[in-house]
Image (cartoon, rainbow, N blue to C red; front, side, top):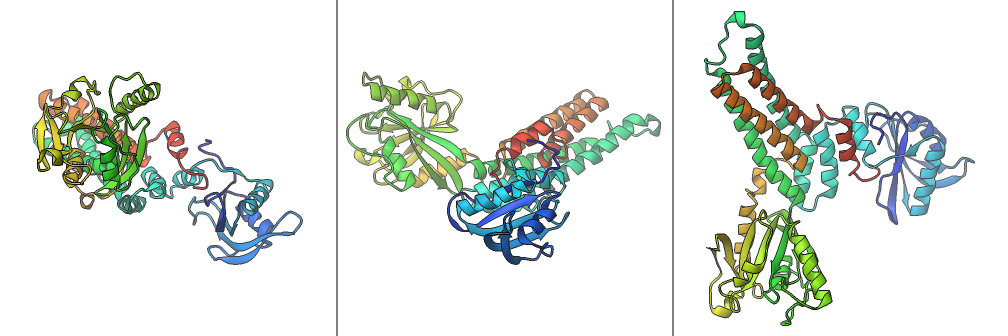
Length: 450
């Protein structure tokens, strides 16, 4: 992607396929000339005008609404033309080809939002919120993405950066002007201000962690021996009969995937083949795929049959990934006259339930939310991405190093550098400090026309 291109770009901004309305979006210096050529006259800026859309010979291609936005009062900050016609793929392509012949080029993914960012119409966190709003899987995620788009997340980051700048000014002034006798190492002000900044960053980190969960959700893999009730648990959590359930061990041969919500958090459920040694070629491939999927999980549910395997001996041979959290599911408790409940076995949390009847399912859902660190959508103000968490974590690491430099070494110069690194890390979130390759990676994940 050409980060600083001044070309005029065009794209179909509505989903492919047939529809009542289709939109062509154009942005760049040729937008005004294209408006005159296609509609016969320049529409008044920011007013909708019903008109014919004309080809090069003056023949009517379509009829619809033309909207013209004059720079800088547009989404991208450039001259923008939107042609709202009928949403058939052929007529949309004809209009797009007309724009291309008039000098535009096809927009790359996310290029309209990229230009909005480059022209200071929004910062990087807000631009990402555009894509997050489009891709939202839950109503909660959509609301929080909208808040981020309005600048809620950015304001929090700007407040942290401003606090760091004020602290840096004080520290560096004391270093650069020692004759002023500002004893910042012993007067307690820097130490107190630094603790305050760390506390605020940790608070934003906690909210961002919850926001990341609401955006991305978790990959929850269901594993266990054959006939333990894994597919029944998938069906119970999904609320539909997505998986075939029989009394025959090894019914599930391939990975089964379902997307659900638990407390507003997207959960990507994966049911796997029962883990056991087998000579059946098809089942053996299913076991191989199951083991491969285990390594991709954010969390594992190990299901075992309370009536057939009361001691959960099967898990000893499971060879589960050591760095992925595991919750034991003591399934079929109704068969052994046990009540659903929470407990611990082998040093792991355990939930007793009946996937067939649904008893204990709410206990499992509450446990999953708690194990994710989810504190409720009401305590969350914005969505966040993994790169945001990485930036905040690096800022916290620098601040902790700075505190050690101050308290243990009395090293003002080291503290000043750590504060600078923390500021740079946080500035990556809003794009105040960003490399072009990072921008290319972020905006290339957007849809065409946005």
